[in-house]
Image (tube, rainbow, N blue to C red; front, side, top):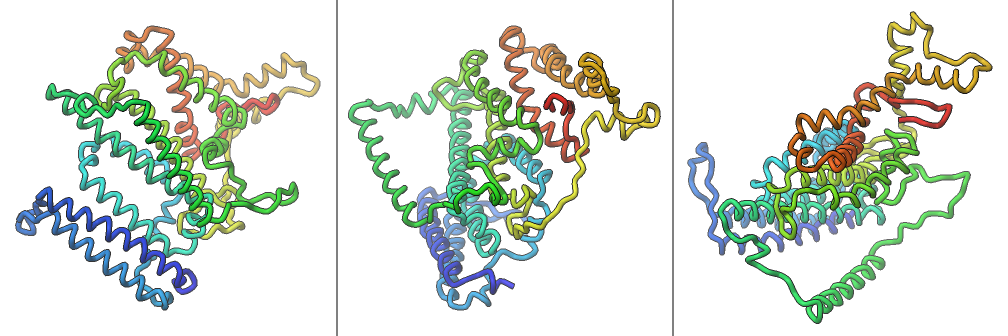
Length: 458
């Protein structure tokens, strides 16, 4: 089965990846040996203490054997066995749908918050890095995976995922340590290890060196990877799928759930205005100039939820999982342009007037008679979309006062009416995306308010 997928170059190239992992883990083994850490086996295996360095040394030896197998077996890729198992590939493809993807990304985000103290341990971080690299290397043995991930314009997205993961882990590591120091009455990391330097000459020299290194890296990148240029644009032949640049894929994904005026104009404007408003609505003066989580839980969780599950995850979805006709594909699935998924999206007004007992009583959607005036037509529109309009108004105008008197009462008392209302509405706009996504996946809800007569849909 893998004969058509694997080539000598792929097998040999993956050998270099495993060899890099060997060097990395050999250095980590030395580090573990110097730290003299031990790992206690479960009681089933006797409960003995095993040196951590011994475990990493055994793992490094296994990686070395895998690298050797790739170098020596590259000439016969048809019989190469070190590939991603079909059972795992089929299971991942089966679970590849928007519901599972968003549920998994949200669940991982919650687990990251809950178990942050466990995750920030050095050996756990190193273990996760190894797991992600080995998973990527095994996945590269799949032809369809290579076609998606190996595209020149998708390679930076893969690098971005590792970079975002590393700096998120680094933030939690420093935040957890600072929270412990605060509880113990010790100086903060930023106070104890002051890393401030003079602008001249220290910072300028550092920036110069970074500029030279980045420029050299971009030159090598441009030589190694072909520029992702396509054929000249033509109005009669558009790419399928036609995707925005990676930094706009989150907005493009919003177009699946919102009308263009909302996804392309209102929501991006609210994001920009919200970022500008943060310094003026933030009443918590703690956490300025140092890492912390416990002192800024609400701010950190809100920002990271908007950034990771609602932005980075949407970029991943749009880059690797959205294929021809904007259909959803698994990471090991062939992008078949003929794939069709029948889906009948229904507006809230249709649920009320067409798919409920009201249909037999009133004969379907209220429609203005021919020749009706503007005022009478508006009345019929309000009758048809009244439930959706009331729900939207309650969401944005009734829910903030309810939150101010219940869940966020402490916030309201400290912030005052105006600042709290700005914060509440920004949070509600952010929450509207997952709400609309869940409604689309669960009951095929298209629009809560649908007024095509005036091109106004929510």
